[in-house]
Length: 541
Ligand SMILES: Cc1ncc(Cc2csc(CCOP(=O)(O)OP(=O)(O)O)c2C)c(N)n1
Ligand SMILES: [Mg+2]
Image 1 (cartoon, protein in one colour):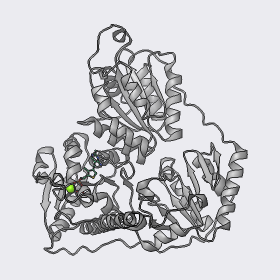
Image 2 (cartoon, helix red, strand yellow):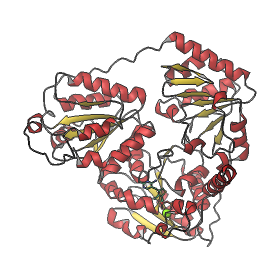
Image 3 (tube, helix red, strand yellow):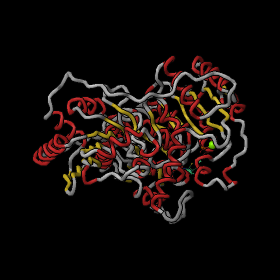
Image 4 (tube, helix red, strand yellow):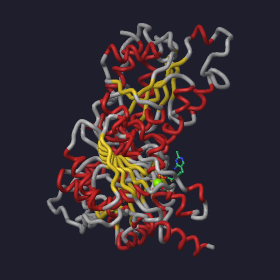
């Protein structure tokens, strides 16, 4: 066995099911072994940001790790933003970069693709990953790979592996995955007892389910826990789509001033808010009507459980959930909650299209054809997604980078085999929408809904006077055929309904529906968000 085969076997043992990548001369040797060994399927794309986004999405919905393989320098550094997004959103992404061979590193020559020094890339990724290794010694490599991949899974954070090109085929032993360290029972028991005591004393406990519940694959267990505790459950903006398919007492998504007033009050007035695997960020809590008193919350995040003024360290979320389930009795009383009502029944008439119509059209489509996993980009399309009925959703709801949507749709289909729906604005499509040109070769056929308002509309809502928010009309639908798919531009609600029905009935080619939206027409959620934030800021002024 060689070093690359040993690494590929370890990636598969840790849950990776595919590799996204773009080769280069520093990576050709290990790309060749990836292709010839067939240990993991290789999906090559066109631009490294998309490689990172696709691998990130696959990590979020797949069995474990997402793998992004790139060449040294120009390739890996092209992917920095996507890896930063994965770090911010706790995605277990493995960055696998080729690198200069040991001999050429000592040649004294400046090497192509080198930035400042031969270590610059490693130093940059040290800031965006939780563990790193340069595999320059085949004897040490199995232990280094085991350590780095264990960190990736355990912390659900990106890691970095650099493979010098003269090491790819070096003989190497198999990697033995590290055993998971057992929890500190005393800490875990004390923590679980105190969490339950707090919740039982609370007059109005609420469970808010965050992204770590997905990252550690705990959704079914958490749904059961919510029933046993008899506690209503919500998700945050970032957590939207969690618990889809799990029988949870899910009330909806907390959006502060932009969301359902009753749900907002329930969360903000709670004297026992249990933030389970939740990121306390501005996108999740920045639009709070009333700031949440974190001293009254129970916050489990990144292996720490904070209660009021003290915290328990080294408590894995999975161990905490198991300990809480062990202390609560199963119940047949699966209490029902009034679930949110999402818009349906699009009026298919000659009226122009608003984002709310797109949500209704998507809900109608899923009611007829079954739910589809959704990949959303940043922009009003993501706020519109809040009005789409509960379904699996991957989106950079916190890091908020554009360009995620289309590549993440490819990652979704690669990881799940299910046809995804992609929601993307015209500005974001200009960045990575062209990756659709790889669908025919890779066998993917997403339905892509482009919100074309010929504008950076999100920015315009905050700074309407700036003309730089005006975008041109790129006529995306006309370009679909050249990329190997089908495209249609729709201007009315009737055309929209017809186009989505046709897209759903057509398999084997990506379907691009370009919905023309008048500038300034926003989704209800974005409109409420902008008005609410302005009201909050006016109150603080
Ligand atoms: C990689 C990156 N560069 C810039 C920005 C900053 C930004 C946030 S939202 C936005 C406009 C999005 O326009 P789009 O047409 O896609 O959607 P919509 O607003 O609904 O019209 C920009 C430029 C971000 N977030 N990421
Ligand atoms: Mg736009």
